[in-house]
Length: 547
DNA sequence: TTAGGGTTAG
Image 1 (cartoon, rainbow, N blue to C red):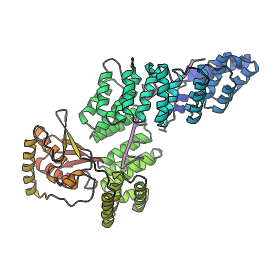
Image 2 (image 1 turned 135 degrees about the horizontal axis):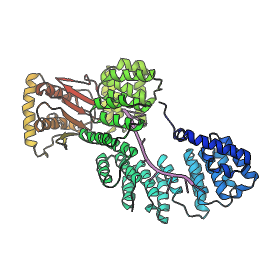
Image 3 (image 1 turned 90 degrees about the vertical axis):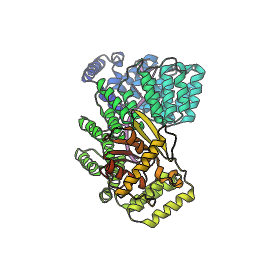
């Protein structure tokens, strides 16, 4: 239930059997005072004092001159994060071998002491020794962790010079480093040049594609990988993430079925990733099912589920869950609070959000400071204008709108996707490229006439929701979401739900339009927009017109 | 004797 650190996990992996062996070995050492009798148990000891005692004896017997023994003690120190003792011992070793360097560099890396890690690696290079394939992945991983692309490229040149790019571990570390630094071209190049690829290399490349905004490619890679390699749980977490990013329900179903078929147990991370995937692919029910099934949950699992209820318009469920979480003794983090706050704003439960988090003025202050930090980020303007709109400060809403025009905020083109027969169809505003374009516009015209009879009035005067090129064009009737829905009505059997995804927020007129569509056609329409899910049914939307 | 891959919001 508590967030675990890697170190703690490592310590927990020692079984009782190991501790017994360790204790026996230590009592043997205490009797014989021969450090060799304890060397193999050194990293498994429960406390650092045992390492220190053995180290003392190693010095007394002058066995510290034996490089094998000194390295063992060094490794034990770094394993227990006793970096000062390790560094003291290390500096005393006159004839260091690659293992000594590797252990010291790895020790700094594990302790997140990146600067000393770099410094020690530089000393290693200056010592005249050739770098080795055990040390390089460690230092490359440091670049990945602190997103140091410059140093990463320097290391890549070292790797290349000695031919280590052909080594599986080194290349995998490089691919992952480039991916985390968003350098997908370089990541792909290293991956393509690998003579041999194992499970980890494939996994990092799958993660790389997702990380760099190409989840479709990630899923294709997963299919290619399976031609020769059986995935494990970590690989599946990456695949689940790709699927979540893609947001396509039938892909999510395939991935979910595969995990069940392979009988992967739901640990905290895989379970949480699955919750996120189902929710982002439109099925809040499956997401909750996974959450309820999980035997272990941490703050991330709870936050994910709370956020999911939130963006599906189920604010009260999100709040219930938040209270349940507190009852279970889990401490919320800042992301939990943001999720709860947004869950309330998505559902019109703003008064309740305010109670938890402060007040509207606080939210306003936060948004204003965000604007100062990133004046070109359109999302911050929208956030601020929504805060003003909810507080009824219409003059301020207008001011934000002016500010956006003044700042010439970059406009993002709007797109809507729809899945029909497991194929994705993409529409932009006024799009006429679809093979059934004629039928789609015909359907739309026909629909609009019926809708107007039922009371739909086209509305161009709505509150600012997003900066959308479509608005400027004034092509209200051919907004991408309207085209996609019209196509959905043509291409799917009567009564089946229509699911579309839009990259921006759905506009006010389209929102009203879809409500009428759900009423007239008796279809459930699920719209995933940039911010949340809207479930339209019988003329109403799950967002209760807050979005 | 050592090394590379995993979850949440905006």
